[in-house]
Image (cartoon, rainbow, N blue to C red; front, side, top):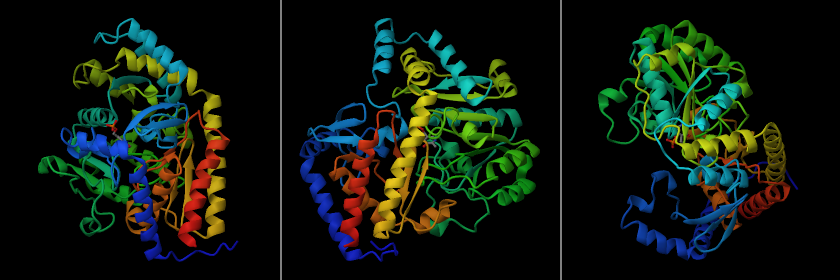
Length: 457
Ligand SMILES: Cc1ncc(COP(=O)(O)O)c(C=O)c1O
């Protein structure tokens, strides 16, 4: 078959999209009933706006290993995996056992239990950061990181990356999805609030610059570096598909932030436990001042963590920074984290995830080449995606101008209707779990091929 890039027939693409939307709605009537009940008590019928999906949310009943079932009884292979939380797979016996045993002995004391010590020791081993504190979410982890950076430097400004999401506290709800017509000149730091309810004066303290461009950072730091407390970034961006760092970028921003006394914060909420045992710190070999974790660290239970240098930890020790929270280090979450990190996500598990990534992308690359689809694959460990752009992405402005949303949406519908539970939204990626094997990867590739065949025929 030819490998020349296809021109996509837009009318046919829209026709297929309507057809597949109709199919999805028809096979999930139970979800429709839940939805009607849910919208009476929850805005958009979901506990978090990130759980919405178009045409409507799918309500899940249960999961086991690599599979989930919706409330209609439809079985799916799970490649969504709870936005990257479940790379341990669902209901892993080691985690069920650890949590059940802990629950039977009491689930919360607001006093430390041994689990938090063991998990902190394991995180230190993986990331090389000497000191750790726990939180309940990624939002809390990045919020605490910014408190630490501001306290350490006595400065108020925060630099972030255009198009990055770091949770929903005021300091980072800035320039997350800036509309193209408001972006302004590239390289000039911008502060575009993401959603309402964030004081204008607070949003203005956060400025966004492009990813993968250390020259811009150098210029900005030469200009305002003495007022900047922190640069917070995802070392590989994972909320605009996946955008990997260019070789040398992370090393250079490490040097520049150190020169200007700016705290470097790696938001590893997504990359943390998924792309290597020690996340991006290990994979790219660059150590920041603070590492923020959440999502996959507690094997499906809510927890976050903040790793920091000794001088930053002293700010908490001396009481200058109030790092607190009733549920921090909750025994159930710590029991799950301990089992996930020491029994499930072993060195062998990371080798398996890398192997799965290579195989899955090889299968998809083959389909892309045979049908001449204008897209490519990106993958890092358990995280990967098809990017619906024939050109690589280096930063948000590429994502906002080059990604074909219609094709991306249709491929999602094909996956859902072929029994693959996949993350909704153009910006997301799959998460592979230790429970996936070659047969499951083949099913993903087969669904993708059905989409490729229909959309190019
Ligand atoms: C990179 C990144 N940082 C922070 C967060 C916020 O984490 P949480 O939803 O646990 O508050 C997310 C959530 O998707 C994220 O992707």
